[in-house]
Structure formats: structure tokens, C-alpha cells
Length: 207
Ligand SMILES: [Zn+2]
Image (cartoon, rainbow, N blue to C red; front, side, top):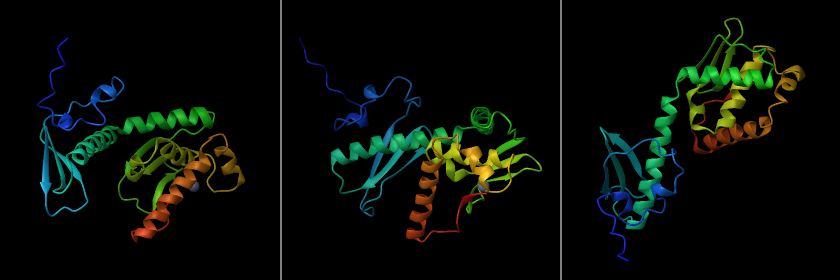
């Protein structure tokens, strides 16, 4: 039997990608990436970055990287770009559906926000709620966090539509959500990491 012909023309497989597309479950790689161009830069020491330029993907890597490292980083950056793009596509309606699901599941459907939206200028808070208008705003920073964290902040704000303060009545509403403590720990970790990096802009808390 003749051996399989060598793979060519796909830069991802030039050095034998550690994560070939075939290993991904069907449908996971929804975005069909166009040509990939790797640019090596002597000015770069450690950082790798990637961006789209039309249908091309440009990956910038340090000049000293080995072919294996390049292959690994290209795969990593493609995944990262795809995840970022997926998050940007999440429309506002998706947030409102998510809020409705959470309200139904954990609050007996009693919290009914009029609007739920992402906001970009909310560095000191993960979320806020205006019960008078039924509006919930979530920091766009939550888009980069695990879903259970986004759900926790959203549920927190939904609960404020029913109970304004942070008394026992309020926390009793959140008891049904199994990952409250874990999500709070995650957010505390983010704040602590920012403080270590000196980028602290205040104490972000769900409002
Ligand atoms: Zn609160």
C-alpha cells in the first residue's frame, strides 16, 4: 500500500501541528480560517500576537522561535482569535435570553429585566442594576471570563431586581446557584491579579 502523500500548502501542518483540525469535534471549528502568514520579528522577545487582515491571519512571533514553537503558537493564536470573534458576535439578545433562563431556573422567573446590555465604561463594577427602569448592565470584561462567572454576575443583578441590598434575603436568592462561591473567588482573583500588576482601577464588585 502506498504511503499517504505528505501534507503540503497548509502552514499549520508544516511542522506537524500538535492540534490538527481532525482532532477537534465536528462543528467546533466553525470558522474556516483563510491563509495564515507567520512574521518573525527580531524585536520581539517573548510575545506572540495575531490579527486578521482581510481573510488572512497574521501571526507575529519572535525571530528565535523554533519551528515546533511556531506551530504550537499558531494553533494557540488561531483558537484565541476564534474565541474572541465568537464573543464579539454574541449579540445583546443573547444576554436577554440568558437572563430569562437564569431567572426561570433560579428565581422562579420573578426577575424580569426590561433590558440587559454590555457596557464598556464600567471598569469599577462587573455589573449594575437599576430596578426603577429594570435595566441591567454588564461589564464587557465579563465576555473574556468563564460562562459560570458571567452567569453569576447576571444572576446577582437579576436578584437585585427583587432585593436591593446585600442582606441575608439577597444571598438567600443566590443560594440555588451552585457556583456562587466559585465565581466570587474567580472575580476576587482577577482583582488581586490586577492589583499585583498595578492596573487596579478600584474595587470591582457586582453592584
Ligand atoms: Zn449587588
